[in-house]
Length: 178
Image (cartoon, rainbow, N blue to C red; front, top):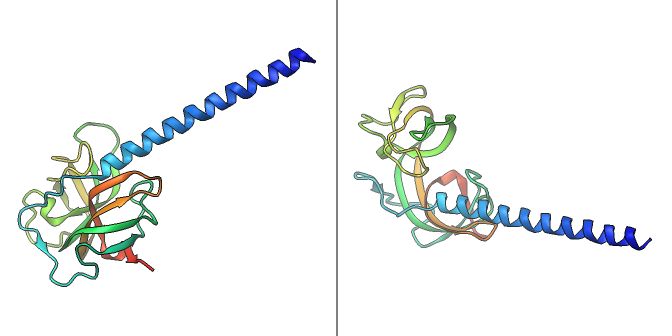
């Protein structure tokens, strides 16, 4: 019976070690996602500040988008508001690997030589954006276009990671703080 009790205790200790390791990996992944969601806050040349945005710079809003883990439901501070065309794109990372499908959002001013906005779905473009690794210079295909106000946000994810100058969330992906 003593050997069985010792064996049970050893197994429980191993399970607890595995749980701790899993939590550490989860925290590391959450930190990496938060780092990828942040930017320098520099905006493209020619991007126009919104004249009358629903959410003014410095105000708060709730994120209703789930582009990345930990976004949905987070409270954000508006760091910038701009009127433009936002595109959902499928792009082929310059770093290789599988295409990134339906990435939201790349704005018209982040396309190389785009011409007149909006571009039609199916149009092939080159990205001049660095939201994600392998995006800058990547070939992309426009999936959809939305004439809207886009917002740059500062927020803490629902898992506690701080994100600064996240680009971009559209007006329809925000709601007022209750």
